[in-house]
Image 1 (cartoon, rainbow, N blue to C red):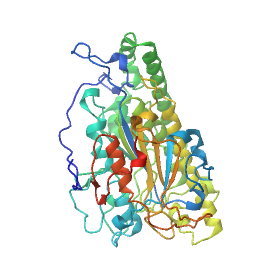
Image 2 (image 1 turned 180 degrees about the vertical axis):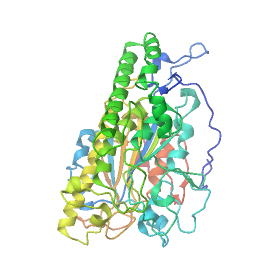
Image 3 (image 1 turned 90 degrees about the horizontal axis):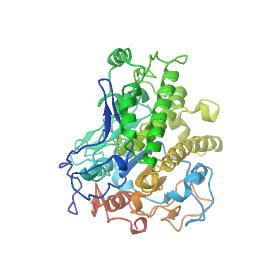
Image 4 (image 1 turned 45 degrees about the horizontal axis):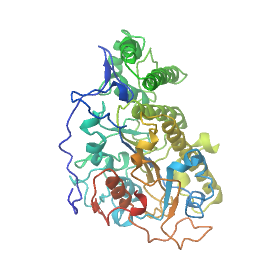
Amino acid sequence: MAAGHKGFDMKGQGLSRRLVLRSGAATVALPFLGSALWSRRAGAALCQPPRRFMAWFVPNGFNMPDWTPTTAGTTWAPTPISGPLESVRKKILILTGLDMQATAVPAMPPADHGAGTGCFLNMIPVNGHETDPARVSLDQVLLPVLNRPDCGQPLIPSLQLGVQGDNGLCDRATCDFSRSISWRGGVAMPNIYDPALLFDRMFAAATPVPSAAVTARAARRASVLDHVRADANSVSARLSRTDRLKMDQFMTSVRAVEIRIQGLANAPGGSICVGPSRPSMSGPLNFDRGITPSAVIQQNVPIFLDLMKLAFQCDITRAITFMLGNGSSNNDYSFVVGQSAPHNAVSHHGGSPAKLAELTLIDTWETTQIATLLKSLDDIQEIDGTTVLDNTTFYMGSDIGDGSAHNHWDQPVLLAGGASGKMKIDGRHLNYIPSMPFPRPLVGPQGGPHTGRVFLSILAAHGLPSDQFGEATGGPLTELLR
């Protein structure tokens, strides 16, 4: 792409065969099995493990003093919020001092949460650009590389997922800017909020299936896997020992998730679920409700983690965006804090030590979910001895830095994975504000590089070099690249 363009051409994505098991009731994508691939060209090289990308949005910023390591380099001491990431420490990168203030504001409308969420993964302001067709998010720009024809294409080009947040408050702008981080051609790509519908999309059909249709199909089958088990056994006979093990692990994992969803749906207060049918677990979204109940978060997030892992493990998709709450999210974290704790309300701490302590508990729970997913990806071996995490580029960020100040600089940013060896994600803490005092303030000084330069670095690592992404300029950050 030529330098200076703020939009990316999304055309020219070809299709090619992939390995799936099909029946009249289900289409199940298999794990990436190198020994099952073939080519009509004699001596063709085996396809390398596919590359993957995930963007993870945490709303309302962090309690930054409890997130930021006090030293740079690789020997920094864990902080209360970063502590859960120790299990994957060598495959993360904490970035301090990035700045997207000039892109997010002037706002009004939207206000700061909507402004920060609206430009989160595309770096185009909302104000004055509400219908800009050049708005395209990083996940969508990467698709031609992630879904390259020589490795076959995944069943689903990309997935957009989220936990219901403060749906009724959209900061006086179109709610798409608060409820989506994935954009294509100026159009928001809506999230799937229900893990049951996500399961259907991944394993039962190409699109979410209405409850009535799923229920009717359930009468014809006991499980998604029952219709494909014989075919899977046939395929397994031609696999290498390593790939047979991967197939067994895959079938076991899918069955385990099925059982969990069935059990949850039949639990008190849940929807009735017969067999593998996937009714809505939480009922219709209430867009007027200001606070998302704790039960929704406690029930849905663990299943989302399992399904996202399977989506990458089974090569169902190679691009995922996940919102752990919408912009201005008021997810109720009473199950973490011990009393009513709407996230946005807690983040408006006003300097209260008690509220800041509650915010740290919420933020630590959030990083624990990230660590759980990253560790699960790192436990899955690829055909070449690397792991799924090694071939994934993971980006976490937020709409703001501090909940009271609503600043769009000094925000929490985390990279993880390995970008298939193209990025230097090696356990460092990179502090772009050397003047940052410690103990650090709730909002640190400005002066660091534009947050969008991280995206330019990710693009360069994927063979898409550019000097501009949205309104971010300056090229990639060389210290992030190998």
